[in-house]
Amino acid sequence: MVDVSDKPLSARVAIAKGKIKLQRKTLELISGDQIAKGNVFATARIAGIQAAKQTAQLIPLCHTLPLSEVKIDIATSVGGAEVTCVARTVAQTGVEMEALVGVTIAMLTIYDMCKAVDKDMRISDVRLVVKTKRPVAAAVHDGPNQSRRVRKPPQ
Image 1: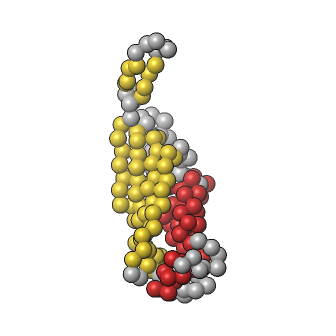
Image 2: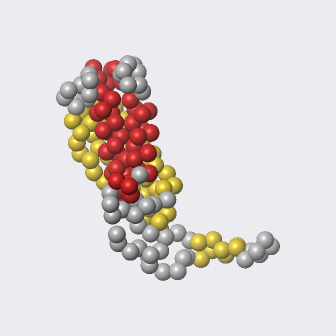
């Protein structure tokens, strides 16, 4: 694992996207909550969030990160769905692997839940679309009646 202990804390955001091809009939079954395994998109959202939280357990050299937000959005269109995962943290290393794992597991969950009714599903175009990093100011309190100073963390 890479040593990041000398890096300052930064607010980091990563957004990953992917597509899953679904037959029109499959989309109708999903929207009508008629898939035997249950609510497909709700389950996929939860699975993606859980997976992002477990990224360091899945990818051997990833750092364990304190995730402040993981959000999975699923937008349907003719021919399938596009899944987006937004991951946020304040840490010394990026959060892109968490976003990629989240979007991938969400799509694999859709695949698993629909495989009995759709033999032509295809997962594609998994990619990182945004990766940002900005410095974070550290708040310092000198006591209960002291004014608040803001400083940047040591580098």
